[in-house]
Structures are given as structure tokens and as C-alpha cells.
Image (cartoon, rainbow, N blue to C red):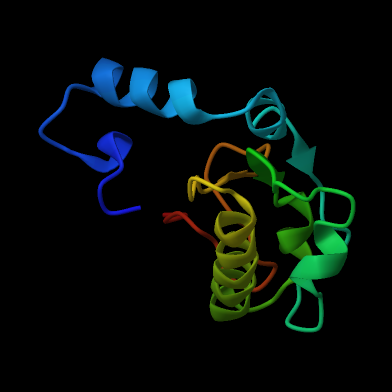
Amino acid sequence: MTSAPWLDTSLTTEERVVALLAVMSTAEKMSQLQCTFPRSCDAATSPTSVLEGLPLGVGHVSTLEMRRLTDREEAAAFQRTLQTEIIARQPHGIPAAFHMEAIDGATCPVRSPCPTA
């Protein structure tokens, strides 16, 4: 993948996008429109089970269930592990966007992600 033009930062964003879309199959493009919603996000959650039935990975991951975690390091480890599996499934190494329907990112019950004062 080192010679992939979409990874060449000397090209414009438009040139990189055009190059990537030109080599992606319709199935790969469709996988980027898919989202997965893990029902649990702890260390015991298998990326394989989260991505079951999604052989090319997904374009985005809802992390709403991360609110159940009490440790940010655990949330980061889950996200890293799942992202690694998503990238491995994608023939062109496209990572997924992780999102939570909140204004300030992952919220853990014992910590606030933003200053409260």
C-alpha cells in the first residue's frame, strides 16, 4: 500500500479521493456507508463478533455503549482493537469513523470529558 496514490500527501485531497474511488469496488464503497453499533465495548468484546457479517468492515462505528465503561483507557483499547480489525478487512486500509451522539465525546460515568467549572 506504500505506492497507493491516496496516501501521497503531496497530492490534493481531490486527487487522493479520485484515486481511491477508482480502485474501490462497489462492495467496498457500500461498506463505507455501513455502521455497526457494538452492544458492549469492554475488553471481553470480540471485534470479530462486532463485525460479524461485515467482511469489508464498516465506514463508521457508533460508540454510544462506551458510556457504560468507567475507564477511558479501556474505551481507547476497545476502539484501537476494533479499528485494527476494520482496517485489516478493508482492502485499501480505510479506517472507520468512531462517533457518539453527544457534543463532547465519550462520556465515562466517573469522569467528565470536559471541565465542569
